[in-house]
Length: 617
Ligand SMILES: Nc1nc2c(ncn2[C@@H]2O[C@H](COP(=O)(O)OP(=O)(O)OP(=O)(O)O)[C@@H](O)[C@H]2O)c(=O)[nH]1
Ligand SMILES: [Mg+2]
Image 1 (cartoon, rainbow, N blue to C red):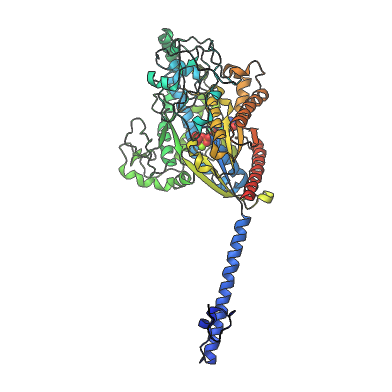
Image 2: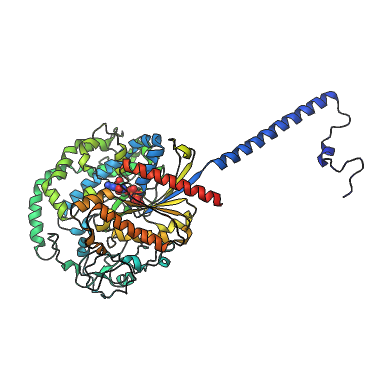
């Protein structure tokens, strides 16, 4: 291109435009020079800020961690441990908010006892009932075929007492069945160790049975009992009186024996109101949920959000309060007190319900300081008396209700936790039970200096329940902590009582390991609830009774955890699309001392993995 006359080729084309006017006065020149200097200063400042931002971004590390595992496996508890360790100020500030959750946990425990007393010989009513007891409680199914498909080679079997050979739920399910969630037709699982065996595909179950219908449509891997009618089984291990004619005899004698508890039961009646009060406190009034249920006798209560949990017909036991993770419920809780008086406008005659939500008793229009705590405090001796009553213990034993092994158990600490000055300790917060639904991401920067990790932003995703269908959305996480509560080898899922908890964990683990989208994500396995496992084994519950391949190995924590670890490790090796490291820990995530060390190891591992990935990018 020709260069205009009088202009050198290297000249800036803007020079012509920006050059000062030929008739510029000295004043104008001064102003122009000042403007130019100011513009240059601003431009340099912008450049510096962009540079600093870039440097900060490069310097700042954001690590993402996903928590997976079946419901009640300990995901939220693990998250709370992270918070306790790395954002202790925030964790401590929130402790008071957990008091309401603990109050609700106490009330629920008492209610479970009262319900057990009201239906003393119904074995199916316990959320902690064993698979076997459940098997017998269901209505008579028609007989199913007793042939299993041939087993692939595996030595990991669930004992099922079936003469046709052990059944291996692990090897029945190939990775293709479990890529992104579950195949609802997966003919995969034996459920438990009832003698007579558990046979038939879930498809067959669908065709033949209506009694074990799951509340979760995607629930998979169920097996129905076959052969003889489970209800007619005689169980030498228990003295349940519910099969055969002795039922009525047992019932009447037990009812008689229970009569001494009647005054106590009456005294504890106010807890029903307290329960609803607490639910109203914990659930934001704006929360709308398709699963919400009105409590018995109060169908006008639209906002209480409860989930169908236990699959039996008890109106209360069917429900476990759940909360969306994140700050929502905490905000609702801290606002609750000021909100309550306004709700009194539409109180009913008793003054205990307003706008479909309960208010303080007495219709005073003023919320007491903490009414639930006051009532619990006043009733503490009665609750202790109920919990320690030998007859109650016996009923719970017969019904295999092990409250102390369940979630949110505080009955051994009643005197302390019902004190009017009670402030939940760290341990209490970790022990409290509040079910989460949905998926939520918690972000925090470590408050506490963690050496080179200071300044790292952590984003921990807590997936409520066992939903692996969400997993594809998290293929960019640095690591997954998978929690398998191995103490639950003799328990069933609360949401589907035909599924053994250990089997469920094994299948979830397999699904996660085999997921191609997660092929490059490091997996960390927490074999959790080892404290409960140890107690259970010491109490004489034998793993071999439920996991046949365990054979006659020692029934100790060390041996059992090593064995299960090796099985989970084998699945990881076999099903991972690419070879990757296997990290496994035996954990009791409610134990702060041991978990602190484990979490520090996980943190280092995750940071290493993060750096590795960053370099690859
Ligand atoms: N004793 C004991 N209790 C535990 C352990 N881990 C978790 N828990 C308790 O088990 C209950 C359930 O734990 P959560 O952390 O709420 O379980 P989750 O996996 O988040 O469950 P969902 O929210 O339903 O998905 C809580 O009451 C915990 O205190 C453990 O290692 N030992
Ligand atoms: Mg949770």
